[in-house]
Amino acid sequence: AAEQLRFDGKVVIITGAGGGLGRAYALFYASRGAAVVVNDLGSPLAGGGQSHSAADQVVEEIRRNGGQAVANYDSVEKGDAIVQTALQHFGRLDVLVNNAGVLRDKSFSRMSDMDWDLVQLVHLKGSFKTTKAAWDVFRKQKYGRIIMTTSAAGLYGNFGQANYGSAKMAVVGFSNTLAKEGAKYNIHCNAVAPMAASRMTETAMPAEVIKVLDPKFVTPLVAYLTHESCPETGGVYEVGGGFAAKLRWERAEGHVFKADQSFTPAAVHAQWKAITDFAKPYYPQSIGEVDWLGLLDRAKQLPTNASSNDSLHFNDKV
Ligand code: NAI
Image (cartoon, rainbow, N blue to C red; front, top):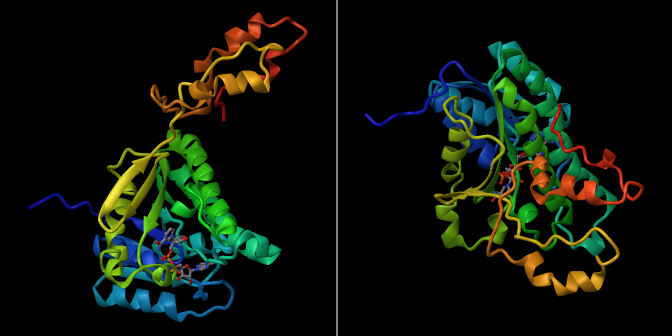
């Protein structure tokens, strides 16, 4: 038989698991042996409101299939209560999938403080609160797997989604940092930008493509990234409709100017091709890699009163 990656004995929290992608994740993990906390406050797409039925239905479906699950109805803003549910019912926690989300699409000129704040609160603060509570557990047991949910709307920008796009890019920065801080505790954190037909996207998609964009065609990548056997951390992945691919930063070869008065806007213009030329690309993965630019050497060559090395602490001490 082909290898099957299983989650027996593992406890998994999925936030926003009452529908869409979260529901698909929850059903899958349960079918592979995990005990699942199905979190969902049952909110309308634009946020607010509350109903237990979304989470309850998913829990029922899992139990009907012989799996283990429990519902939690707290907002992700109360992440510690969600983690408590896992500990109380199943005694441990291994995987956290930050998936809950809301939308308040508006062109930027019409975007209110409320539209901005609510979206930041659920996606960014919610991921922070839930992950913070899980982090303590993961650190103590020296094991944890975390998923952040980003979006093409953040990675590339999308009309009408200034609030959502910024929150979604913020969780990428969050994920990158947790990957670094978690490394020595065997805590891995990756970000996925899913594409799936759900109530969040159905109005934006032609009917024919909705079939191939079933949320269950996102699940395998998320499951793999959170499996004990997966070494990956600090990655960003696009996944949907059976497609999966990793993304990374690419830096142009660039140009090193003299750190003196000759470094003018006109000099920038004159070197624009080199600054923006990706023919000899570099793929930086950590903040320490600015040393590659020879910054410290060049700082030493400056007149002593012109600059101090104090601003050049690139060590990644935690
Ligand atoms: P969905 O609207 O079907 O699911 C989101 C779930 O989160 C809902 O069940 C909702 O009740 C729940 N929720 C909302 N606020 C909550 C809160 N404060 N606490 C707990 N639960 C809350 O949407 P979908 O498509 O399944 O989205 C899941 C995630 O994937 C979201 O983070 C979304 O931004 C992201 N995403 C989805 C894409 C897609 O193509 N469907 C594209 C890019 C990102």
